[in-house]
Image 1 (tube, rainbow, N blue to C red):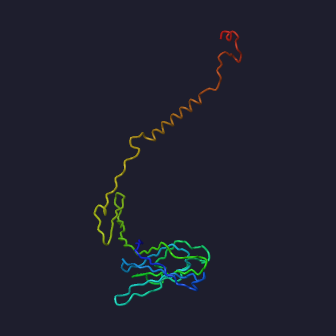
Image 2: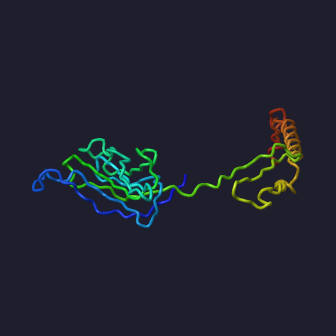
Image 3: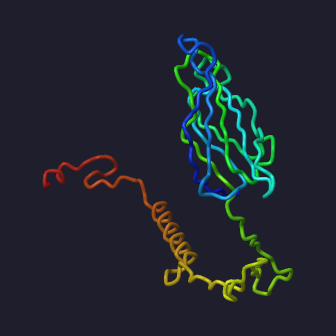
Length: 236
């Protein structure tokens, strides 16, 4: 399913102070980030994507449009979602996270505003937040085009296809394509391979016959019965 990015305005973080602000133990453990959509009508949220930065737990509340006469209300759609299995270790501290509509506790339609509540109970990290926040809504639906195969097989052996759509009309040339022409043989104009193979086999047989009839007996020029005539050798 396609998705479309929703332009949003991310407000600055608001710290909820816990403990004495004059000591190191008084660092804020909870941050609140509000996300508004000033240029977008109420929409159905599909996905939330962000990069974590040392946030251990995430809670999301959504303000939804109900009706004209009823004020919009805040609803908790995600509660204490774990981003770091161990808040005191690095695991999951800087991971990219995607949260989808089916993971939410309520319906995500007619969204007006989001509120992200970040918690980090560990005192080891100086700061924590979420970065690169992206909000997505559902994109335009597909046209619902499908192929229909003709129940009868033509004599040419080719299937006939027809495009159908409940709202789209296609031209006739696209609904009934012309059968493809048969490509020209790649070996056109070349000698017959079977004839070439037969001639090569005949040449090989003649070669073997000549090799078999060739004598291995040594022909001497001057020896007679293994002896040499001194008169013949002297003339040479």
